[in-house]
Image (cartoon, rainbow, N blue to C red):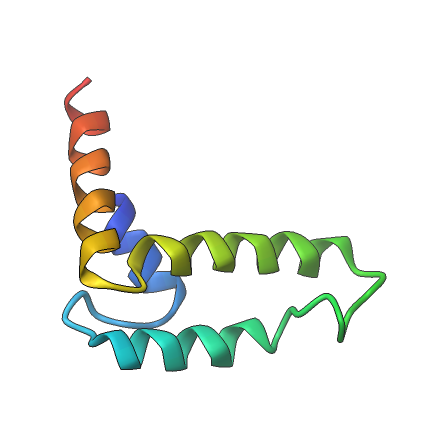
Length: 77
């Protein structure tokens, strides 16, 4: 499974999701682990950081393409 597939799976989306669907799924998931809501929970903080990284990687077409290229490059090495 590619990194891009994993990212979409973390947000419960297909790779065909629109930018708006990605943002909506991200906002829904981030509420489950936001540090302001769970200030003393380090696991939630780690989950929050992972989701932020996922979102930055797939939030728009340009970022998805960069992630796809990076993932493909790393798999061939």
